[in-house]
Amino acid sequence: MPKALITGITGQDGSYLAELLLEKDYEVHGIVRRVAIEDPEHRLWRILAVKERIHLHAASLESYPSIFHVLQKVQPDECYHLAAQSFVSYSFEDEFSTMNTNINGTHYMLAALREAAPACKFYFAGSSEMFGKVEEVPQSERTRFHPRSAYGISKVAGFELTRNYREAYGMHCSSGILYNHESPRRGYEFVTRKITSHVARIKLGLAKELRLGNMDAR
Image (cartoon, rainbow, N blue to C red; front, side, top):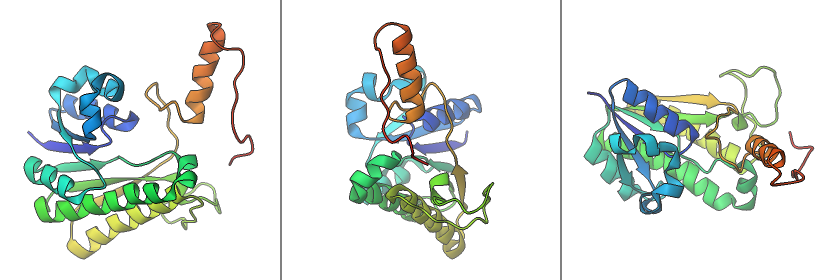
């Protein structure tokens, strides 16, 4: 039975991926913050339906020893690195934590895999924010990066780290470039979910208006 490790397993993409891999008879492991294990009702709600079928490990992307310990213990065949501080506007408010979590977290994952499970296949979730200032439409893997936020910069760094570990150490490392995608599990801090949830509240008589931030955002 192949083993997969997912960072960001409690998020939109991670929860759907966990369900898909379980359907394919994988042994599924996930890295979560310790506080999530202590408060499953609020922090693990996306994976509650399959929680008893997956193995959760408390660790922090900001701590190399904790990441290394999990990888050494699990010995995954595949690693899907989806976790990140992914709210773009917040990355302007706190650039340091965004960079620390997203860049160091990716570096720690790659470095720990190299030491503990070098044969593991690694996937890094990139972002369309890496392109930032759009210079061609549509974009492709050959489009020049021009990030315009700390989040975008952190994703470019993760993309390049992934490439470096593939080329320098011969590891099976690949990146995907994800654009906005929606589902009922999308976080409420994102504008699309703000709109849909407030429309529902207005329909139910629980709210009278919808307030949004910068209407000129691109």
